[in-house]
Length: 129
Image (cartoon, rainbow, N blue to C red; front, side):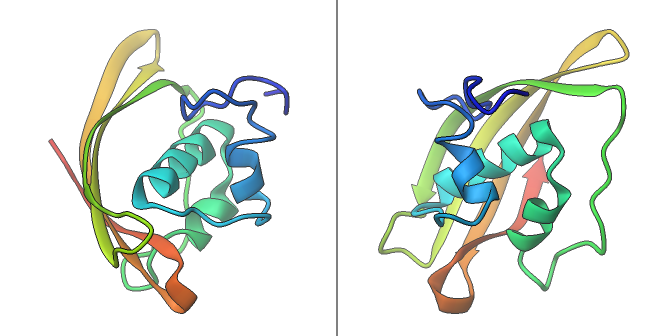
C-alpha cells in the first residue's frame, strides 16, 4: 500500500495522514471508534506491532498472525456506544468485508474498548456474531 493511498479505515484521507499517524505513534486515538478504525487498518497493512500496542494487557495475545490469502476489503461502522473523548469505556459495532481463497465474506463484531495507561484507548475484547 502506498502511503498516499486512501486509508483503509474509510475516512477521507490518505493512509499516511490518517491511520498511518497512529501506527507510527505520532498521535493517539481520541475515541474508541477511531482506535477501532486504526486497528482495522493495521490488519489490512499487517502491522502486528500496532495491534499488540493497542490491545489491553489482560487480553492481549503473545503475537498476532496474518493469514496469507486473507485480504480486507472494507469497513462499515454500524454503531457506537460511549467511547468519546471524555468516556472511559466504549463499544463499536462493525462489519468488515474480506476476500479469502477467492471467496467473499464478512466479519461482524461488537468490540469493547477501555482507557488504559495515561488514558490511552485500547481494545479489550470483541464478540463476533
